[in-house]
Each structure stands twice: as structure tokens, then as C-alpha cells.
Image (cartoon, rainbow, N blue to C red):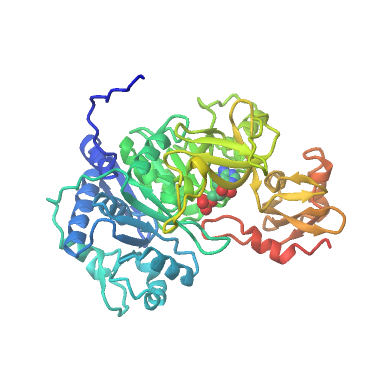
Length: 540
Ligand code: AMP
């Protein structure tokens, strides 16, 4: 029998503390710029961030926080939040990021479920904190992310300021070295069905994900990159950017709470942002602002789009402004990056049609992630670009089991994503729909994402969502809910005519309903469940 022999290389564990150590030591001038609540900019460099993160870890240790303890954050993207990522994760505790847009009862549930001992929050969420604090008696401390002189005028037991807490710590702290499988972060799914579930990230999975996210086929980061995560640090760790930026020594620009088109544009221009990441809704408002003001981007090279499908028209609009789209797919359960689609190298000469075709797919799996599509019996389907199936993924930064659960989510590490996808012969994956959003018309499937992508290209529409409406003959038929651009006069017929020649006849919606706006969930995705509750009976 043959036998392997052990390699003779050091086996230092992959810990998140090493990411900030690396940036502070090898990219000392790497800047971190944060927009604060009052609109002013705070700037410092990686060594400053590391010093303060260590001071925080030391202060937490003095306050009795132990390894494995869960520490919650309810905050926008900013330098103190970044210090929590590294201070808490670096000491072996768990940084639990919470989405402030969730219902207060849901936030309280999440805090109790995670058994968070401390909650750090932006001052603007003080009202929310006052609401949830009585529902979370186990929380020992509530810490406002501000200086002592900026404390909210709220009387609450065990309320203190971040800077006062930091002052109790020491910079002489040394990061502990522990097993790389130890948890460093926790994020709950948005819980569209049932209660939210916790996904507990490990140091190892987080560092590996940061490596993969940096690669040329992924975010293509380098020390000369200027990176703007518009995606919040409470939405799957801002897609790993707070870890990937220091891994590369890239400049990090943290936008705070001002995420409207004008504020984002000004920040991008002022800081020379080259790469920005966010959900399509965010980009819609940025594009509106830039186009209406006939503005231009001086530095922005790439906009990463994920969280929901990127409409074809968004590829065109960014291209017209000299910006390439990078289209990514992922989930809270996959840390989140699984697949990305990009034009590599930047192909300014590529015909628009071809550009759209490539970028409407979610693309190729990153090294580390494997994927397959299966039918209802679990049989793998061919990679021919047309067979639809349930998308399954596995890899070292994919969830094994939910926080608190006794059992793994799947067999052999395969995780059923709840998405329906095709994979083409070259390995590029395309999401057709969430399983629960796909429209089943007369036994055939219609992708609501494709219908929306066509509708969004209509010049008089701002946004559109397609849902399944009950139909007496076909079971379900597509129904479009559209938001007209302000001042535009567009009729149902105009919209339906627009589909002609762009989609198979039976994919064209049966009806268009105009609405003032669409409901979005806490991470900016259109809430189709709410639309179905409101409109599903419109064709019956
Ligand atoms: P979340 O865990 O809240 O980030 O949601 C993950 C889900 O968002 C995925 O399962 C997909 O349904 C959807 N999603 C993420 N990225 C994309 C994308 N690029 N295109 C289509 N759907 C996406």
C-alpha cells in the first residue's frame, strides 16, 4: 500500500488578525476613508486601524469577553465597524453583524438567538436600541460608536461610548493564535420564510474567501485599487471586501449611511474609487444621478453587481459611462462569493450584444467552489446552457450547518441554494430564478429575471418586477409591476409592445400594473412575496 508523507512546511493557522497585520506591516500607507454621519470624512491608515483594533480586543478582554463570545454590531460601513471586525474576530470572539433595517422584533430575536453579550451601534440607531434593549435582557453592554462627547441623550443602563471603552485597553495587546476553524463572524439570513438562521463563518473560511475574492477572475484587487463597498458590512460582511482590501493593501472607502446617487457619486470622484460593489437598486440611483447631470466618472473602472440579477440595461448604462460591470452571485450561506462574470481583460471593443450576453450570466465558479444543477430526483443535469435545475454548491467557504442546528444542511457538503440555474458548456452559470419565484405556465417555466431584464431596458421605466399570477387555464402567467420614470407617460400597451421580438411570445406578461414604487427588503432586493400577496389574483 502506498503512503503519503507529511509536507515539511510551517502550518500557521489562517486567522483574520493576519489580514490586518499584513496590511499594517506591508502597506503602511494604505488609507481607510470613512464618511461619518455628519457627512465629514475620517481618514487614517492600516497601522492606525490595527492599533485601535488591538486596543479594542484588549479592552474587551478586560471587560470579561472571552473567546467564542458573540458581540453584535448594528452599524453602517465605517472605521469603527472595521475595527470591530478585526478586534473581535482577532481575539477569537465572534463579530455578529445585524441588519438595522429588519423589524425590531426580528433584531431582538436574532440577538437572543445568538446570545450576544454586547451590542455596538451607530448613534443614529439609538431609538431602535431603546426599543430592543428591554427585549434582550442578556445583553451586558450597549456601546455607541462615538466619542464620549457625542453620546446620545438616552438614559439606558450599561450604555457607554466606544472611545471610552477603547481608552481602557492597551495597544501592547498581542493577537492570540488559535485553531483556524474557530468562528470569527456571524450573519443571519434575511428570513423571508420562517425565522432568520445564523451562518457562522470561520477564520479559515474567511481568509480563504478573501484570497479568492481578490483574484483577477473575481474582484481583481491590488494595492493600487481604491475599493468602495456600498454593500453594507451587515450584508454578508460587505461581500468580504473588509477582509480582501487589507489582504491586498488596497485603499478602502467606507460610505456610511449616505447611499443616495449624489452622495455616492461625490465620494467616488473625491476619493478616486476604481472598484465599487453593491446591489442593483443602489446602482439605479447612482446611474440616474450621473445621467441626469451629464456627469462622468474620472476613476471608476468596475462596478460589481450582485444580490439580485443585473439587468442587461445596467450593463449598457455603465458601459456608456466607461465602467465595466462585474456580475457576481452568492449567498449569506456562501460567504458570499460563489461565481462571477466579467470581461477579462477589459474589452472596450466587444459588441454590446456580446457584452450583455456574458454579463447577464453569473459566471464561473471561483476556485474552491464546485457547483452542479440537479432535477427533482437529485440527478445531475447536463451543462448545455438550456437545462434548468436546482443549483447546488459546495466548498470551504460554504455553510455546513446553521448556527445551533444539529445536522448538516446537505449530503457530501452539497448545499441546495434554492436557486434555479443553467450552466453552459464552458462552465458559466446563469440564475433563472429563485425556486419560489419562477413562473410555471402550462407546464413550462418562465424566468421572472429575464422578463424583468427586458422591461428594465424600457426608457420610460425606472424599475420592474415580474411575478406569477394565478391563471385559470395556464396555472400561472407572468404579471409585471412597473415603476414609471418621473414625468414619463407610458402605457401598458407601450410596455407590452416593447417585449415583441425580445422574448418568446408566451413569456410576454399578461398584464402590466403601474406602481409608485416597489417594496424592497432589508438588503435592497425586491420583495416578491409581498407583490404576490397583493397582485397574485389579478388574472383569475
Ligand atoms: P442573501 O443570502 O440574502 O444574499 O441572498 C442570496 C440569494 O440572492 C441567492 O440565493 C439568489 O437568489 C440571490 N442572488 C444573489 N446574487 C444574485 C445574482 N447575481 N443574480 C440573481 N440572483 C442573485
